[in-house]
Length: 409
Ligand SMILES: *[C@@H]1O[C@H](CO)[C@@H](O)[C@H](O)[C@H]1NC(C)=O
Ligand SMILES: *[C@@H]1O[C@H](CO)[C@@H](O)[C@H](O)[C@H]1NC(C)=O
Ligand SMILES: *[C@@H]1O[C@H](CO)[C@@H](O)[C@H](O)[C@H]1NC(C)=O
Ligand SMILES: *[C@@H]1O[C@H](CO)[C@@H](O)[C@H](O)[C@H]1NC(C)=O
Ligand SMILES: *[C@@H]1O[C@H](CO)[C@@H](O)[C@H](O)[C@H]1NC(C)=O
Ligand SMILES: *[C@@H]1O[C@H](CO)[C@@H](O)[C@H](O)[C@H]1NC(C)=O
Ligand SMILES: *[C@@H]1O[C@H](CO)[C@@H](O)[C@H](O)[C@H]1NC(C)=O
Ligand SMILES: *[C@@H]1O[C@H](CO)[C@@H](O)[C@H](O)[C@H]1NC(C)=O
Ligand SMILES: *[C@@H]1O[C@H](CO)[C@@H](O)[C@H](O)[C@H]1NC(C)=O
Image (cartoon, rainbow, N blue to C red; front, side, top):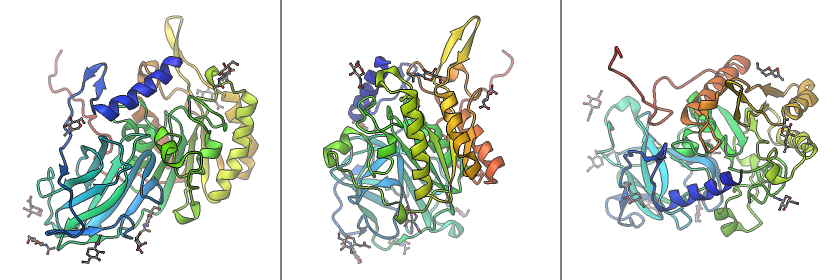
């Protein structure tokens, strides 16, 4: 499993330097838009500029007081009139970080952005129609695709005769607490292809936040160079990245739960790293960390239903077939049993959802694997809690259109 850690660093290095996506070892064809433009000064000719704290801007996931994004697939959403949106990204933007963005339910477009101004929406945005009155104001949404890289929003610019419009939040919120699995490590578009995003965005009518980071443990211990575990880090605004330690050292901003909509559902998938011998943790440490974590989550979100997901760990050949592993099976079920009479803790049994070829050589689900997990969890939440699916067409998973129109072979 040392290999896994090494791959982790390699992946961050690649995404910083080239934005090349390797698919089964081969360069994948991508269609990223070039959006960088000369800096737009505040309210310069033709533009109207809003600061990063404009009340019409709705930040999704975790952003700090400097408007720097953290964790997996954080987002920004707002309504606007006119047909131009440019964003000036601040100095704390990861160079070349890949963002997905769109208007309304049009397909996601991608651009690698850096500190400076990027003209993201213009009348030439693919398929945009800025004149149908029933769909005005237009909704803009952007997501950082990675789990550890991020952006800093310094200003939003619209055409000078346009305005930002505050759009209401969806009434339901789901919170994901996880590690590399939930954050989509090694999936095509990383967090943006992971099951956390696929569940949150898959509903189409809920707010979601993915507080997940590769290698992190539930137990508050150093795991794969993440200095702290989720029993500590989840209460902080920033993640365990090097980027965060550069800015905040060991004193991150605390996350103020009271300033944000409370989660209605919390989905926890943690322990795969606690279960790795590399990190020297015992099953008692894990179990006790889990027992202490649940009441803390319940304290900040008293009305949330907390779902504990069982872990699959990986697959190994056995006889003439393959078999799913599993990590801390008894411990997680034990935590569920411990709290089940209180009514707010639930157990999602993930056994049998994935098969061995839903796993890539980097020990993480493939895009198909992530979609399978998300589909099962979406249906589980729908049946168990009565949440309805609210996306009737707009793209959720990007570039998953594999088709065959040559029959008869
Ligand atoms: C994305 O980043 C790479 C490397 O930084 C650069 O060569 C490329 O031109 C950028 N833009 C697009 C549209 O890919
Ligand atoms: C741009 O001008 C508007 C008034 O037209 C003002 O409210 C706003 O604060 C200005 N933006 C900046 C960043 O100065
Ligand atoms: C936004 O920040 C500016 C400068 O930091 C401050 O003057 C202004 O009151 C803030 N506006 C809001 C809506 O918080
Ligand atoms: C936008 O949609 C309206 C109403 O469907 C249509 O009349 C108009 O031609 C469309 N504009 C463009 C540029 O496609
Ligand atoms: C803004 O100005 C442009 C160019 O002059 C014009 O085409 C557009 O209709 C105006 N939009 C609004 C909302 O007034
Ligand atoms: C929606 O939630 C976000 C994130 O907490 C917040 O920034 C924004 O102000 C909220 N929007 C509304 C309309 O309440
Ligand atoms: C785990 O224990 C071994 C042997 O005591 C030690 O070499 C290693 O540094 C420990 N690893 C961590 C992450 O603490
Ligand atoms: C991982 O979990 C399995 C199944 O519960 C258990 O047998 C094993 O001892 C655990 N390993 C570590 C290193 O915690
Ligand atoms: C989880 O599902 C598997 C496969 O159906 C089953 O064998 C196992 O008993 C289930 N675990 C629990 C705790 O229900």
